Image (cartoon, rainbow, N blue to C red; front, side, top):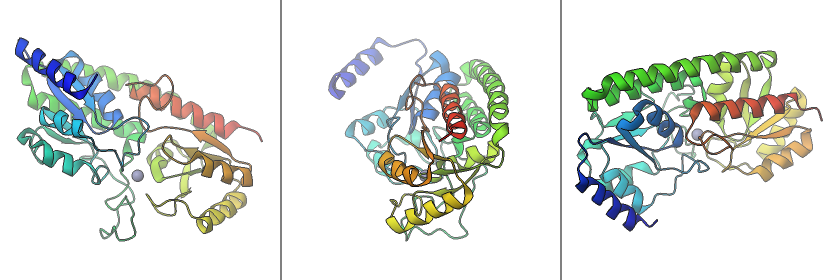
Length: 304
Ligand SMILES: [Zn+2]
């Protein structure tokens, strides 16, 4: 469907005039979209801007994103500079006062989250995309629990008549998540203290939650592509510390990860931050984390 037909269809639906219009929610990335869908149920429609296989720091901005933002009642973004490279111009183009910074329609997931690796001084001079701290907190499911509550509160503020529905959907989501967190802790417990290598520092919150050690990356700095001297250093450390797995995401170079794995005997494990990026995880945060945990456990168990 072209964006023009989508627009025509949307206008036709708007003209039909539903008794209680659903909140139009836009999210930058898919894990927020999945959680907003669960909390909002049939009271919201959710559009995700980034593809599940796209780098969240460098999303391909499209004119259709401006149209989507222009018509939205609420925007959920990660914040902590995750989207700083692409969202501000889209918001400017959308000219939607409902999404103004600080307003009830602009929801920053990072509010209320304890960020790690916050630098003492803001400095992007070397291209580090984590200048405000590490924005990948959603890979800790306990942080996702906090974000879900934040989203439910925001939906209540925007649509008070449906607040009881949002709160009840939140409770159901949190109890499903709590049961899975206990399962994930159990399957990862035998690997407590095990170091892992990742392409980018995406899995630091995950590692912290589940007792793994994540402080070695194929990137020399967040957002800076791997260089031969840096990779030589990584290979040396992996050999010395007997590191067995390298995590790689859909938009990262699997070839680079494979070449390091060939030199160290490690296993390359495919993981993803976004629902739909791994098979069977479309629009389901819990299923995504389940698939990630299974893949990481299989990688840690692999004998080479
Ligand atoms: Zn990052």
